Image 1: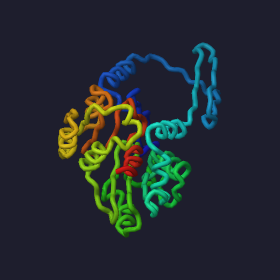
Image 2: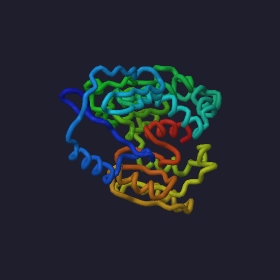
Image 3: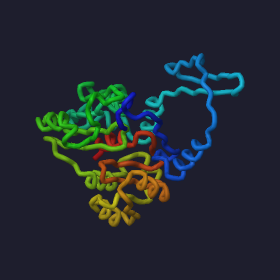
Length: 288
């Protein structure tokens, strides 16, 4: 989620099977292994087409057998979302069939990783005009901007929302785990409020009609609106440190809890979602 390149970051972001950041014991073990590396080999003539979906296998002399799987993460993610949300109902809202008036969106991916997911879900699947999607082509340097979804760095989104032509706006950070939500006329929705509204309305999500929510989690500095929702629903709520990895650890200990952080992120835990949790915020906005 930082600019890459010769003068930027270089590395791999590793998420665990629950969709959350790697906990300390995993990263510590990885580091320990790196201290024991004594040699490495370079296979300069290996040709692998990363543009073709499928499996390739290689036998490298003196090294061993290697398998490379190339997947379409966008396709897999869309299929997962269609099992969780009511896409036909969302589409009827966006098209105006449900209310008699189109529900206008404006989404800013800030040249981060969420761009292909946003354009595929909204434009290709839900039939929204591509003009509703801003900066959806991922760039290593984020187009020279700073992909922090707030009123300062997503100013172009804010300015357009303030014209009153759109009903819902959202911006996502570089790696898709934080967001900013705006209502009509650029009304800023605080993370604590969005979490509370979603928590109160979770029965609108088909997945949670059959997989009951056990409780909610929030970062300690986040306002306690969700606490009141949890109390009314007689569900558990826990507060943890504001770092996202701490929040995920708390949620993982309480399966199928929903969490919100002070850094503008609302996420579902491993049984429901993984990879790019903030796209879910975009879908949540439809039923909120």
